[in-house]
Amino acid sequence: MILYTTTFTTCECEHKQHETVVYFMRYHRIPNETVRRLPIYLRGLLSLREEGRKSISSRNLAEFLGYNPWQIRKDFSYFGGFGTRGIGYDVEKLIKQVKKILKIDTVHKVALVGVGNLGLAVLAYPGFKMYGFDIVAAFDSNPEKIGKKVTNIEIEDVSNLWMLKKRKIDLAIIAVPREAAQKIADALVKASIKGILNFSPCRIAVPKKVKVITIDIAMDLARLPYYMPASH
Ligand code: ATP
Image (tube, rainbow, N blue to C red; front, top):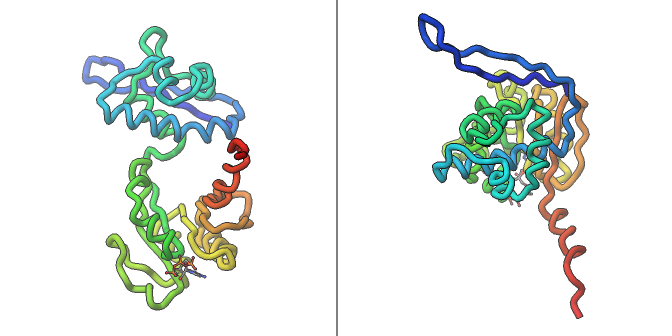
């Protein structure tokens, strides 16, 4: 991954205060593990902001997030490092920077496909907004569901998925049964969707340019007993 990071320095010119943009270009391969941790850091930082914290030392931030300070410093170092020695991190600035790296500093419109029990829970979940995701459309194939409104969104016929591109929706959530998932993924790719969060319990194949993350809650649960102490 070639990465451009941007830092803003404030400068006083004779006319008015303005921002000078300084670009750092770094040629680092960012480990997937680092990218996976960034939203976790962001979630912690958002809670700190809610608590009214303005700045935090790297040690306290690490404690709050449950990571080692070196891990956080290493992760941030891929992006130029954000802290100031002796002062630590400016919470608001760090939130902005992490959001920018994750490309969630602007709102992403999201479509949901499959408005069954899981889909309904997704539509009702308020947590997506915190990261800048706005579920603006929902699709299903069941004629009894099409046309009904859920959380102010009218369920549309799944045959209209091709319109997503026109509506500038670039992310989608799949919550259809396993047998339908691949067909839906194909239709989403055709509609120029760039990222898919797949809740169907199966692997879906897509071209390289499309990123898929599959979440199988039952499969995650299936890992837990392995770590449990044996009962006598
Ligand atoms: P329900 O019984 O209300 O449908 P459910 O969660 O048990 O809920 P599932 O069989 O898991 O239903 O299906 C999830 C949703 O996906 C349903 O609303 C179903 O109508 C929808 N669905 C199934 N196949 C497709 C498809 N090919 N395209 C779009 N939606 C589909």
